[in-house]
Image (tube, rainbow, N blue to C red; front, side):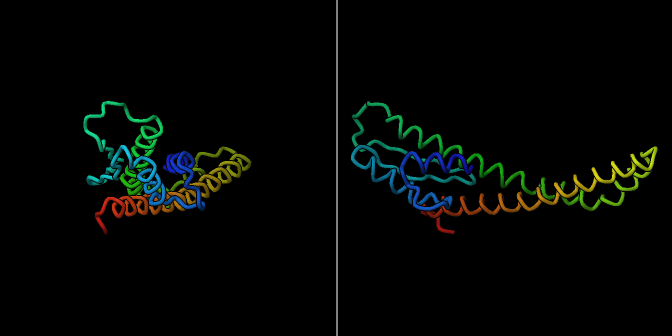
Length: 162
């Protein structure tokens, strides 16, 4: 999602700051192509896309590559944001289960270790893995928040104010 937004922002030179804002980019795309195309952001449920309609309906010329690129990037942003939101709950449940199972896993480590040295190594590995799980929990919450912000902004651009 972030990569698609950055690609879109770079291709239309709307890098005014380091946010993930789409509003300025969609505005610049509209402005750049307004002579030949009516560009809008269309949203249906959790899917949004860059809708392009020719001003002159008799024009049979294919879309410029730059505009096709923008459509593909918006499609990628939508798909990534949707996946982040839809898989986020499942991932949070899994992370919660792992963190709640810490004591049980520690007991399994104790039973599996043949020597004191091996027990120490396995316990250290378990602690390191749980540390990474906690880190993943923080990241997934941030990703879900960003994806939600992208959907909210897309809805506002499309005219469906939330």
